[in-house]
Image (cartoon, rainbow, N blue to C red):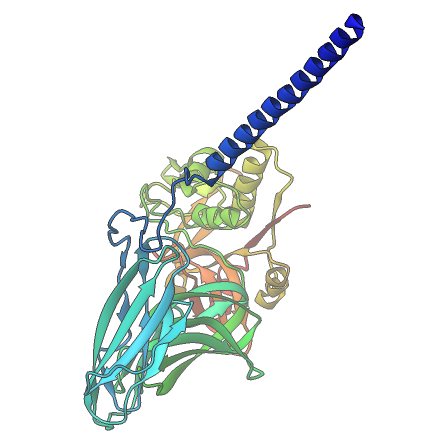
Length: 455
């Protein structure tokens, strides 16, 4: 019995302890859960109220005007003004807005556009018309500029063409560059210009458009025939006028003439100067003086028993082209000089004398793109015998005064003209000559010519 009571007491005590432990554990969990709830409900994170703003540094103007302008400061009623905006700085792209006002403080509605040119028609009555340009960049920076335009009564003088000048009276068929200038008056300046040419079929080809320059270099290509160069001007209010000039395109080659008196000069060196002109056409880099000093066969004079002996000008230059008191040479001599040069530089080109051919036969070579070195007279003056001597093999030489050598570059059967590179012309341009007179002098000098090309 005693053992049993003790056992029950022990069991009771054990059960009570277990229950007490459970209570304590539950109390601890509740406490922990309560503390966790208190922490989660606390406002520990910073907040920004609705009336708070993050401020940025004060802005400075990052975009500015760089020469924006209108095409007119004065205009007649109902005219059109163009604003050309030139802006620099800031962040691209720019957005442009234009507002317009006349005789009132009230601005008209703004017009937004993304390009930098804006045209507006001014009122139909006299006033001071203001255009306001506002520009925004990508970052939101802004600049404005005002333009004041004086609108006059709707009365004006007619826009008229005064004159046109072109740097040449003709062009060679192929690619050409010409300087063209014109002058207009009346209307409402400034004027815009358009440049074009019209072929023989009436087709107009635009060469340059929308420029305020009244003079331009124009590059274009032609075939033989007549062409019209046209300059069209348009004033501020859209009135236009044009002026034309006929330009003749001929069969000729684009040679650059060499002047025999350019330093160092060759007073009697028209033959080697013409040879240099021809060689440079074929892109050989050679000067007239190098040809004269290194490749030209030269013969000198002497008196034997009071009789003058000298070279045969068919084969050697009579005298020295560097000296004024000399004579000259003919086709075989120049062909030899050219071939001496070709041999020295190991070139496949070859020069050949073409003696006795009719002038019209030489046009065939021009059609093939080959210029012809040809003998004529100075300024197409009449030739005559002014000196004689004997060659060393006993032949007599009669030297013709005014003997001259040029390069035949073109011809025009319609106008009966030929075009030559003349060493007596100090300009690079070709010289236009009457074909009949040129042929007469060519025949007087015994029909001498030289052609150059690959064999």
